[in-house]
Amino acid sequence: MRNFCLLLLLILILLSSGVFAQQSVAAKNRYKVAKNMFSAARYADAEKELYESLKLDGKYSDALFLMGLTKWQLKQYDEAVKYLEQVIRQEPKYYTARLYLASVCLEKDEIARAEEQVKFYMSNQPSDPSGYYAMGVIHYKKGDLTKSVEMWDKAISVDKNHASSYYNKALALYLLDKNEDALFALNKAFAIKTANTNLYRFAKGCINYETGKKEEGLKDIKYLSELIPATVIGLTCLAILSADKEDWDEALQNADSALKLDPLFQKALEIKALALENKGDIDGALTCLETILKNDINQKKIEKRIKTIKEKANEDVGQ
Image (cartoon, rainbow, N blue to C red):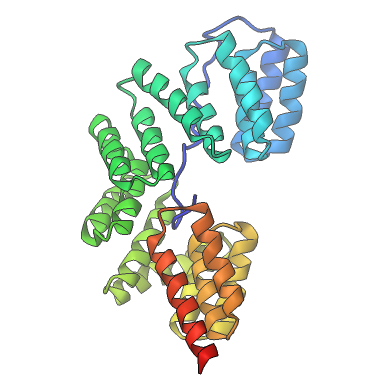
């Protein structure tokens, strides 16, 4: 579910430190190493250390929880569920495990199960914005943008600096054609210093570019293309700049480079579709757009674009 890049439940390693059962020193040491590796995105290495920790203590809740998150990052979703459920069975008040179990369930399209976990979390942690944020993601997944915005507003009412809620709210408002409100929310997110600042700037640039503020949008897009050229965002920015010049070969090359890093990054798929369409590869363009729609039912603009391309193709065949 990547609209520009909709943020799912963020990985904030909210791991308790021995508030539950006591663990052996050896198990704790292995866990600490794994936690550092996880933070460095070395998930396979973290997995190995966690296996060793759990050999020493198979009921070590923090290690089980981190293993669940690690399996999630390795896209081993059934295994992630197994570990997170074990944490919950052992420690019903390990509420964070329920939040991340919900996120894994969303990856598996088990929306009802995810909603059940988030509701439990919200009822026990009403002062934490994370529950409302997660419920907003669930409503988005269900295709109810208005309810999503309501939940993200609730998260913001609990924590006025909840940048990810402002960001996701902006994307939903954009899809609802409330462009000025979307930009206002994005500017609020951008003003809050987080690790996602470049993502927020990217979304702001794209929305400005697409809604009548082309030059303003291009400033942000060009800035990011120079600041982070080897990332999925930077390469997508390069693709947008190439498409703006109608250099379709270069746009396609940059979009493909971005998609090697993230095959579902929506804006890169959009630019690839545009480049392929202009190069006469209608089937390729439709495949890109249908991939977006398959992964996000809220993309009505993409749905309309698919319809337009098909109608034009049929007209060309009939002539």
